[in-house]
Image (cartoon, rainbow, N blue to C red):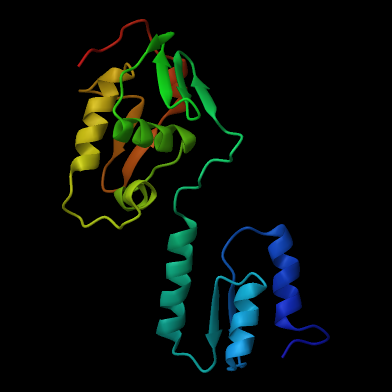
Length: 188
């Protein structure tokens, strides 16, 4: 019980200012309450009593989903990193004003990385964002695509600085490395 206010109004108020996950833990078990909770902005609605391990698993699931790569804002269409320009609206990329030939899948992966510059993206996050399915732990298509993208964007395929492999984590686009790029372009 909350003094003076119910959870639905608090959820509504919080949702107006907060974009992260919200879990409602309540004694209300009626289906209409469950629906109202989700309609007011909760991402999950858990009825008491609940086993602590189940509650913890649901919290972890919410956090996992909230850590998925953020879809760039609609107005975010062109990103510039030194000599590298990636335009999502035109689905084109340029290095030193020269067009880069990328397949559709390569462009999608490059855009995902540059739109999340400075943030390590796991293979799970990449698969979810690009394919809408989870990573099975075996598929190496992302690794192959990265190896093809690196030389196209002027990254050293042996000692990459732009798209780094973060061991046991995933991939990281390093925006500072693009600013420091020398005139040498690797061809692949």
